[in-house]
Structures are given as structure tokens and as C-alpha cells.
Length: 205
Image (cartoon, rainbow, N blue to C red; front, side):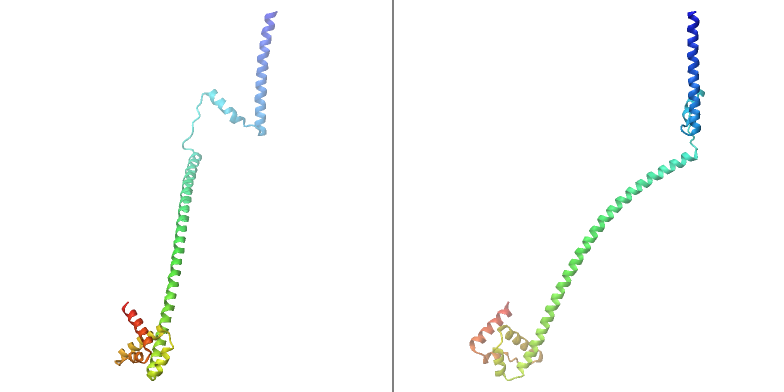
């Protein structure tokens, strides 16, 4: 009696386990139908193990080749992007250096233009002064020496010296005798001495 009861209990346990497995499999199939679970994907490894098959990757699969090609292209694009970024940074650095050099050149050019302007202004002033000195010399040479000396005595020493030099230059150019010596002889001795001293000092050094 006890042996029969023990055998019956074990048999019932096996039946219950089979029933649970069937219900689980049925539920999995039902969930797969509803789209909740991919039963085929979950059970395919089990079926593969049961059948003793090995999963083999097809090397000629167009999708795999396309994926590999796209992966390599992405890697190449990433490398290219890094190179372009590096080149762009280098170009920006070079552009900054060029801009700085251009600014320096423009500043130097402005400085040269300013110096040239000042030089031209001084040259023009010198030329104007030369013209005025020649006109004054001609005017003084054309009047009586006594009157010319009176005018010269009212001028500054440097202006008198400049007129004397221009007068001598024009006389030498015309092949005539300069009136400078005669003008000096008509001046007071102290003023004539000062003018001669200044003229000789500038001529010598």
C-alpha cells in the first residue's frame, strides 16, 4: 500500500512538471504572437544545441560587407575630421601671424609716410626760404649800398648771413664781384666782426 502511494506521487510530479513546461511554452508562443517577446530568437540557441549545429557567420553576406565598409568609412571620416581640425587651427594661427605682420607693415608704412611728409614740408620750406633769400638779395643788390646796409642792420644775424651767402653764390654764377665785402665795410665794426666770425665758424665746421 505504501509502495503504490509513493510511485503514484512521483508520477504526478512528473506530469505536473510537463504541464508547467507546456504552459510556459504556450505562454511564450502567445507572447511571441502578441509581439511582446521574440520566442524564435530566444529558443533558437536551444534548438541549435539540441540539433548540435554551430552558428556560422556568412562572410559573403552583403549586409556584413556593407556594414564593414561603412565602419571603415566612418573611421576614415573621423581621422579626416581630426586632420581638418588640426589644419584649421594651424591656418588660424598662421592667419593671426599674417595679420600681425600686416599691421606692423602698415604701421611702418604710416611712419615712412609721416617722415616723408615732414621731409617734403621741410624741403618745401627750405626752397621757399631760398626763393625769398634770392629775391631779397636781388632787391638789396639793386639799391644803393648805404640803403641796403641800413636794411641789413635791422635783420637777425642768421638772416644777414644767409643773404650774404646767396648774394655771393649769385655773383659767382654771374661772373660778377660780390657786394658782401662792401656791405660789411659800411657796417659798424662790432656788428661786422660778429657776422664775419659767425660766417667763418659755420663755413669751417
